[in-house]
Length: 221
Ligand SMILES: [Cu+2]
Image: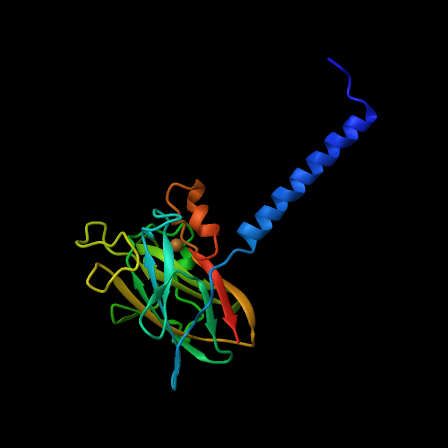
């Protein structure tokens, strides 16, 4: 086998460096910086109205079996996005239609309602301060605001369960409402803390770490 000379080694090192740099660029552009278009949350005289749904499986490409959030615009149309644009220093009235079954929380800390107006939520019209940890399907949490709300799952044996988004009110769901107040303009993260990513290690891969599915950004303007 011929020995590779000094010049040859430099070529190999340069080529390997270029390939690594290209892979890092692909990771940054197509994963870290990729995000769906923002949905502008409709506002009324009482504040902003944020309407979301969580689904057990999105039902479409590129990940039909991934769990996800969706957002509804002011015309009632559902969008597959978790980039939510809300006004600064405004009350945001949130309604979440929860179509998934319970996964359960690993850390019961997240089963308490925190950071919302009155530190409460309503679940199917009933005011609640917390949820039994095993009943949680997802959470809606904005760590920068101290907001965390556990979302009650539908029973495992519920009839008419939804598997393709967007789900409709005729299908089995839980309705959760709560209100929080936004702060100064800026962009902050929000996410789910339930290990809900089935088939991923510890339930925290895939949709749990990808913007547009189980986490997103709150663009406060
Ligand atoms: Cu989740």
